[in-house]
Length: 536
Ligand code: FAD
Ligand code: 2HG
Ligand code: ZN
Image (cartoon, rainbow, N blue to C red; front, side, top):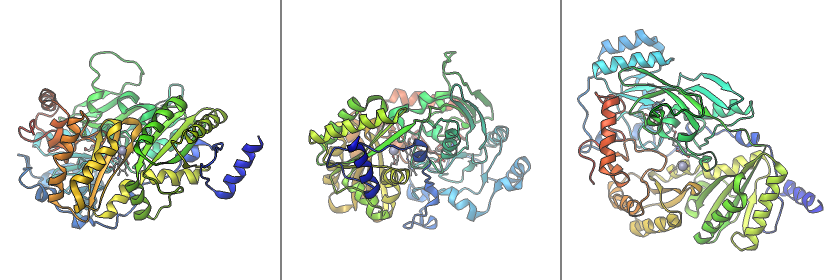
């Protein structure tokens, strides 16, 4: 008891303490942690201006051609104004600009119109009309996607889901939440906390991304280790098909084996099979106790040992296990002027526990930390002691994506590869590229076998792309990994699908697309390669 009190005093005095001696991890209320607000699109990125972004149709000239679609006419605009009211039909080029460009400022379309329906029936009427006129449409949620899926490639109509933002129902007994597709993830989480529940997913873009966008990309994020993917937590969806059909698969039962489970087709199909207007999702209870440790490690072997050990020792209270290499850490600290609370190390791990009993979890984490220190796996680290420290510490991980953009141009690779290969891939890529780039770094969801390999250069350089690709895809295919673990294929990765999927699977996908969207009006140029793209 004496030791415990002394340690708490130290924590108060020092704000944060190094783990160079065994200590009892501090405890705090989980709701404080999940109240951290980070709206990724509210941050302005200094390096690239929207106007400077090259049009996708120019940058990728030769590899993508406009389909045989109708061109927007004044009669179409009049139809949409009549349907939605004039304030929900945006044609002003300044307002359109941010919707034509993605968050990364890498792809840019030239749409002339943005529609903001308020109801599923309006979405249905829009699609029915567009289908009859063969007008192409791109569904857009929070526009935080990282593969160029959420913006037009040419002049597709942008269908914003932002106004479908109603919370429809919450069954507090079962934890099933039913909401409209445009609800912002963080808003839902804040709402649920008032009912002692949380969303089963969490990601750095939470302040801007929408649940419909999350479902359509099958977003992974920081809690997947604990709560599984959206294929397990989403119970039902309402989706509008390309011809305007309202498909009500809004099941709210945990079990439902009546025929083919069609909702799964909308999870991860990136707006190419239907527009998600409602989602039913199973939400876990809000944990009573959360701890977050940031640990420094000297070699990759120790990273693997630490992961094994935290799975074994922390078991059911382990809720997140994230990996940061030294280049990623120096990027987020230097480019965003953040402070890392521990010394410099080749590798870092963020380990979060969430549970129902603070004493139990604190003791468990404390024992685990003592153990990994006495085995020489870890010799430096800190445990956050209050909500602001926790927010800051998560910021070191969540804001890496943002910090990379300050280097100039970012080449992103979101890969599933064997755990043993995370650092080998980064080193191989470094050797392969030599001094032609600013940075090669790796970070991500170690607990899920998902690394984010990022390479930066001062500006977009086609020669750098040619050096990276197909090298990286061949590397991943050789290890039977996935060339897109959680971000999807969108526009930027579609031509590489065959590195992760066989010809027969791609052919079935094409047939499915034909059934759902025979005129190919829904998010064309995305997910599936254009012509004979099965081989590479
Ligand atoms: P958008 O970007 O608007 O759209 C993404 C795709 O879904 C597009 O193809 C679009 O056409 C389609 N779409 C959107 N809404 C609908 C709808 N209602 N119906 C049909 N199709 C629709 N992703 C992860 O998986 N894990 C992470 O940890 C993660 N962290 C991120 C951190 C940052 C800082 C940023 C910027 C992004 C991150 N992402 C992450 C990527 C992105 O946030 C997710 O893909 C998110 O799910 C996209 O949601 P959105 O509402 O912004 O969708
Ligand atoms: C994350 O986990 C996101 O932070 C972004 O998925 C990954 O920037 C990336 O490559
Ligand atoms: Zn991620």
